[in-house]
Length: 257
Image (cartoon, rainbow, N blue to C red; front, side):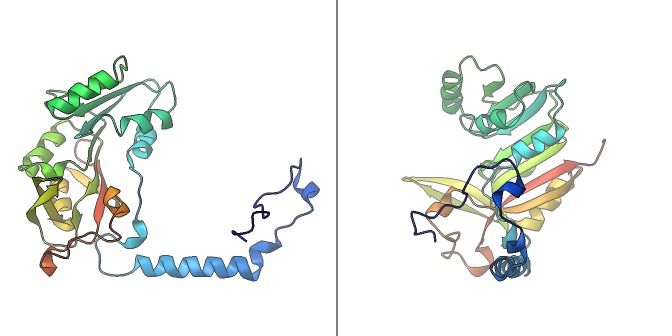
């Protein structure tokens, strides 16, 4: 039917269910039931296995807007620290998804070049601020890291610094943490080589939890690299280092709450 240009999924404009002359019998018909059965069987298969994060959890959306919406109050500014947040990549969808009258303080920590571009591009936007250093003596509702903490040598020290902001949520998106052993590698990037971490999933989680947080959401994250590679291209490593996926993790603060 998808190849038939005359076929329409929706047809007719009516004022009531009765006027359509249609009914709900399709919900118990063979086609509907067979499709539900096939989807459930696939979902069940993708939910099983020894992986720390099951394949069924895969998502391509940052969880940041959804967590932000769940904890936001119209009378109080929502304070977010986006570490390695680029030129406001997470800011743009967030402000469109939250209510227009939601007060927001969104701080992006980036390198000098990125900060200068961000300040120019978002000149006059009072809700976002770009700075090259982590802020001192501030509190945040959320600390978010999207494709960033893996490029920090002293990642444990950075996690400790994040915890001092006492955020209700610590979030890591497109994080190279899976069932592999922890190791450091060099990422080839258009003629450059960037040092970065790959973590064992449980090791990374335990480190964050030691700072007074609990893991409340985990998913596989379908990053930009999936456009070019159907699977994470780590076959050049020995088996114990071959990561099969990147993760998205959300931690909630437990200490001092």
